[in-house]
Length: 110
Length: 118
Image 1 (cartoon, helix red, strand yellow):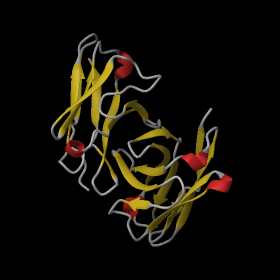
Image 2: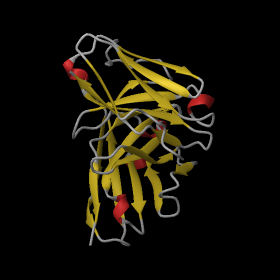
Image 3: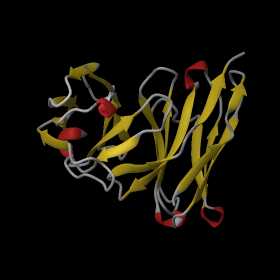
């Protein structure tokens, strides 16, 4: 049950697009279209931003999009805004019927 | 609206036990699988355990298997986490989270802090 691998930090200027990667294995990310992404502000509970690789729940900004290729999933934030500065985590269903989270990425808006 | 309220956290000595609860409202609790997820201070999210909507199946992270037990009382809309043989590395905020069709974690509570220290 090793954590999925994410970059520790990603930064961008307002208006730019950034992409966060999430790398797992064929037993999790690569094996199922059950990758989700969560946004977390300091001291707050996480919030679902993307589910089933590329679907947005109601309430999530359409500037957030997701994709997957092989064992790597990605979250793209377009038109970066100051309010997007937060921690982001990916998660996947696994072949053991458990769940696994990514290591987390801190997004900084320059 | 949907509310998940965790309780039962606190300071406990290593080796002792603690039972967390999560009271659900605003949803048909018995229709949802439920998870516990934890976050150590300054660290990332760690999945802990899941229980199916009817309690028929339970799965655990290797780090807690054999020490923690997830359970639920659908008549009281409540989720539990019994934590035994606690270790310093179990120190974390514990969140209860709803499950959507075994595909993703959906709605999160605010969490309850557990500190394991002598």
